[in-house]
Length: 492
Image 1 (cartoon, helix red, strand yellow):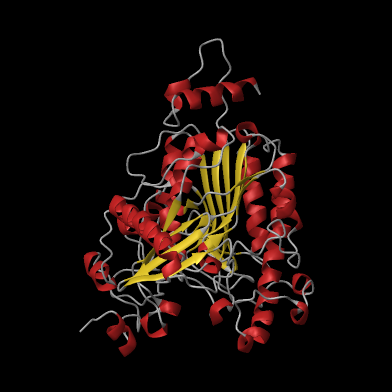
Image 2: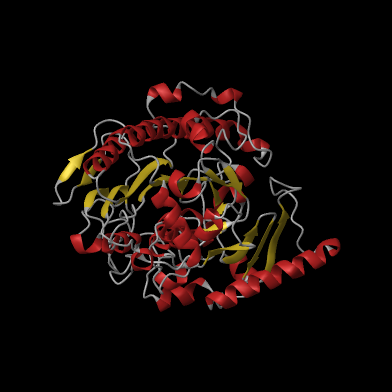
């Protein structure tokens, strides 16, 4: 523990901008241990669906127990709430209009500097297991043509241990590719053998520092493919829905929710096994262990499914972080928002690794080590280009917005669109836009959003501007605008 205190003192002295050379030990001191990083990513798990968050009907006993010794981030914001853009922003610490992945199945450039490459350069063993969704396809190819192909070595962004499928939502006996591009099969429900693979990686590297990402496919739809024993935990008819699910959708919403919960409980079961393995391997104290998701799922709130939308069911995800050696063993709540690009620099800060200049997110590690809430008033949310299930013809629209601890404010191309007081209106049923009594609040939120966009040099242009800038083609019917969209946005 003495070495841990030295590490923390060095970290605070250098203001969070340290690298290994800043606090090297003298010749008579023991070498400071680099913390391991284990990052567990679920797909489409929204923040509201956790026992520790107050949901009494979902069964997540292992995550609830983990929360009792972790930092609980109450407002973890998916900056762009959809798969590939989230992953690119997480791995690079950049915003989508910088790295260019604001649309699924577009290739993250090889030039991107990523978490895997940074930790590898610091002497870490690196590993990635599960869903990747960053190799994409080449211009003019079928939009989903790359989802079943192996990812070349030079496209793996610094990860050496490699058990990966670009994209699959078939979670039973699914295939993946190993380091040698050999096709392999995850036997049974893939969450379980993927977790076993993660444990094997940790066991083999327990004497060295390592950075591992374990990326699960569920609880992303299809909602009804979890193992039978987890489906049996839930009776759809007895589930209580969020009050913002319209009456006409409630029967189907309960069925979907039961399947979604079954996937979540299966992941919780696997997570419990991984927790025990870390303890058995003696890695618990010096491992930064994180559980989160890349975006949420509307699950029929507002009458719709899935993501991209700016409502809390889509943009807020759970996040738990445990690092006993650096953050202590007491659970505490972090209330201020943290956005996707902030994750990488914060992990680097906790690891004592210098943050590259390309990284745009904020490093909040100093706040966390000092036992404070993070100093962040608002996190940006954006959708430069609506696509796929929320394409223009389905009501999709470009937007920019902010989520603070209390408020949500969003505008589209025509101007202010949404304003919610989430403390008084947690289900976002009362839009306060243009209401005279909230004029001062709207003005202050607009100023805050404008400052965020100015900082990002984001001019908030229509979708076609960014598609042309990055030489992208729309997938299939994504570019078709209905008449009401053209009228609303005054487009020719």
